[in-house]
Figure 1 (spheres, rainbow over the protein chains, first blue to last red):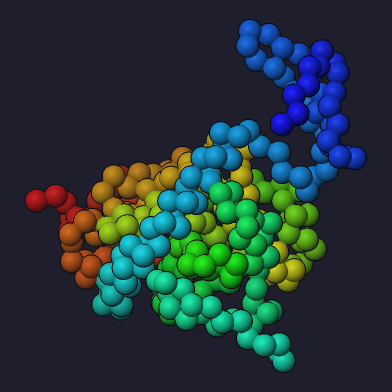
Figure 2: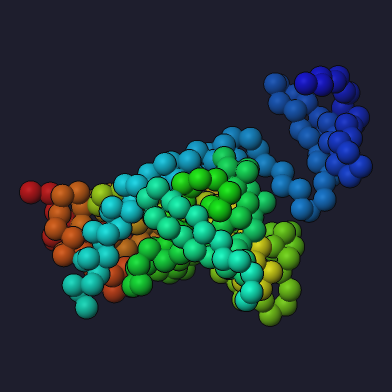
Length: 80
Length: 188
């Protein structure tokens, strides 16, 4: 892993079209400005991780889900 | 179509056949960056649920549904860059699905990260909504089914251990289902 030191106002470039600039920092927080092409997804890690976790849980439960859905569908059919 | 049909065997869903023109391409999903090619299959002819089945990762499938069936006024903010990512052009038919967590008697929808699909380009994207309008786990069926932030959710499926015959179609109700629990699902 590459570790760099930057001052406020300085930037790091990633590839040809991504630039991350340190805007300011205070009391343990750093404010970043990110310039990236729109097709590059930029997310806070914890937001992305939350979605990844939900995806994993939904996929893991697919066996149980198939079983439960059969129950729901039987119910739907008899409603008709 | 002359292309060879795709055929995979899924541990839970059994044999899945698909033709190339049914394949949806995603840039991976969070937690599953290697899963890029999918097909959507109905769970059953009349089911409100379907499956987003990975053609790349063995035995990977996500239960999916149309969020509007459960949360009629669900309106996530889709940004122009999301549309560009799925190569949307004017007039394209679009589809919005959400991943569901389904267990016996409960269903939770991930309304914070809907699946945006362009049916012409066959490109899809799991959109991660930046504004916290919708929860990643919104209970829409079962005990504790709560209303969405917009105040709409139906809660008419049986809770754990109930006879599935007491369930109803999610289309059937909705408007006044705020915190309701059907009589059949009341704890004894």
